[in-house]
Image 1 (spheres, helix red, strand yellow):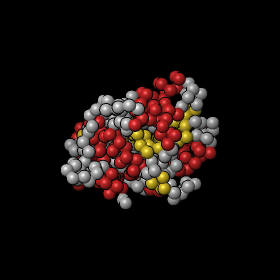
Image 2 (cartoon, protein in one colour; image 1 turned 120 degrees about the horizontal axis):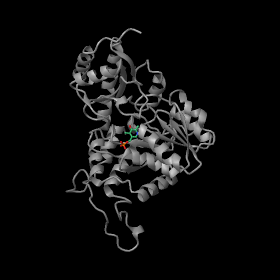
Image 3 (cartoon, protein in one colour; image 1 turned 90 degrees about the vertical axis):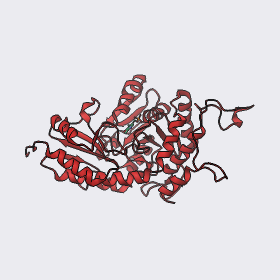
Image 4 (spheres, helix red, strand yellow; image 1 turned 45 degrees about the horizontal axis):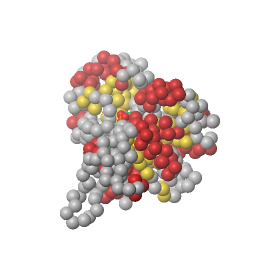
Amino acid sequence: MHDSTKIIRSTLTRAAAGEPLHPSPVFAAPFHTPGDPNDSPYTYTRMNNPTWTVLERAIGQMESGQFAAAHAEAGKPYRASALVFASGMAACAAVFGAVLRPGDAVVLPSHCYFAARALMQECFVKMGVVVRFAPTAGDAQGGHLEGARLLWIESPSNPLMEVCDIASLCERAHRAGALVAVDNTTSTPLGQRTLALGADFAVASDTKSMTGHSDIVLGHVAVRDLELRQQIEQWRTLTGGILGPMEAWLALRSIATLPLRLERSSASALRIAEYLATRTDRVLSVLYPGLPTHPGHALAARQMQHFGAIVSFTLADRASAEVFLAKAKLITEATSFGGTCTCAERRARWSGDDVPEGFIRLSAGLEHIDDLLEDIAQALDALPPTPVR
Ligand SMILES: *Cc1c(COP(=O)(O)O)cnc(C)c1O
């Protein structure tokens, strides 16, 4: 079955007469639990909840697949198992917390999501974890694996859209005895199946493209190995970073349209990137893995099914970026990405990212592409031409 069919079928209830087609949220703290608690599938919602179960089954199906050609077990099918969390950061923290002990080394991308970097430095490094930074581009992290416990990958990275060879890095990490986690937020499992490429953990903020309506915060961790699953689940139960049933239910409604949204936003992002690349009179550089001029394009085309909604580009300076965002009527100035409406922001207004002052991260929404291109054109026209360099 194709992904779109699988997702739709996986969120339906059993076809019993009079049942609603879709499960409703189950609001419960404790559940009836007579006698031995091991006999009850649900006892207390910090441990498990029926609405999570449906969502986790659907995400698990998306993350399942066959090992990619580059992998030693090429072509062999595997089943993924997913655990949902209160946020993408709670999912990141679960992998860090379940895997890393004082003295362990972790290899992090120098430009990965800034809160993941901050969590590592502010908490885990202070507890004795050793962090090694290396760029995503050029698979540079592969040179720092000796004796490491965990390799953390983000490809394409947020917001610089750097790409690395996930299958090759997984193989090198496993040879060095390290586990591999991929933060797959920018792609979603339908854009890129990271477990198939060899990762031990697929991690994501499902706040972004996965649920795509800019109204809930959640995340997940998916694994193939049941022992690793148990460690992540224990972390969730003990730290309590759990998803509310209402959010889980909203997520279930949202993921049914993921294939449609991903197709539309990726197609629009490519058109926007192509247009921006023609505007050398105003735009200094465009970063989108779907552009043939992107240094990671061939690699991205090999390991990704969709190039995603994010296009990053650089204007002359801070003032140009601010004027662009003020003039663009169909681009909502906000952080985050992957929602129904096109959003953008000047990333340097946050202190976490090492980007130029005129750097904009744009997320293509689901509006008609002609309207978006027209709006972007008039907003660029409002800027002074950039000096030829
Ligand atoms: C947003 C994001 C996160 C954090 O997710 P939240 O849901 O905001 O906690 C982690 N990684 C990446 C790449 C992100 O973009």
